[in-house]
Image (cartoon, rainbow, N blue to C red; front, top):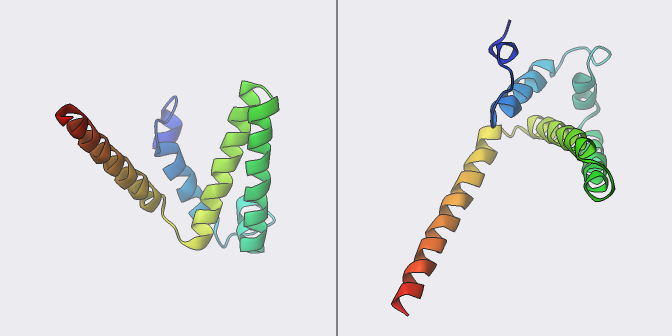
Length: 120
């Protein structure tokens, strides 16, 4: 049993990291036995098409459907984004680093704004 199977609900990016590892494991396996392998085998145009479809379905769910539908479509969107990252050689940690840097930069700007507001 894997560490993931022993936990009730993976937290944060842990599930994304796990899914990414599974996607990487499926690369080069028999496309008839795995949707992920089939998608990777079909290449970037098909992966991008699926990602676009899932993005649209997520937007529709947000505007017109229930909470559960939005959760399901969001999960599909994240999965297909991970497939795109794998196809392009992007490690999720690279994206996490970008998000972290943006957050730090925003926090620094916010602190500078507060300091200048206090001086005024």
